[in-house]
Length: 175
Image 1 (spheres, helix red, strand yellow):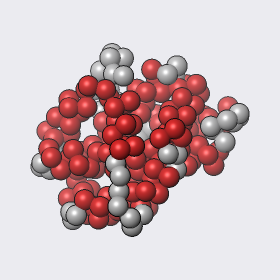
Image 2: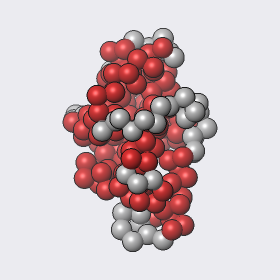
Image 3: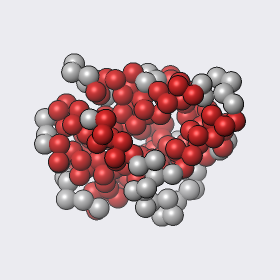
């Protein structure tokens, strides 16, 4: 799944830009730099949670706990954006290594670190909400079939723009 294209088509980049008061082109540049780390963090969480179908179910359970598809709806909405669910998700994905992920993203773009820091929580909410909504549509939060969970697993394992997969250190030290 090409997450960047999905975010563009859905209006997600524009929504984040609107909430943060920045130009969509600037938000898009930062999001492009942050997506590989975020998708990698989601994958790592699945791996730490047992991998395969069980890992995806654990991720979906976490996303449901934080707000399920409403995470994305909050970002896409017109009202004030509370990013606490995004911060909580990032803490669960990266723990203390979030700063290192921001450092890596900062080195791959001209976007300032403070802007990347502002972009990351709503981006996590948006992607997490999309995953939760897709899981709800497939029944993945409950007793979904192996093929339904397999589709979610494929989404989390395939990203056209993610070049960080082979560079990530899967040491399991994140909590």
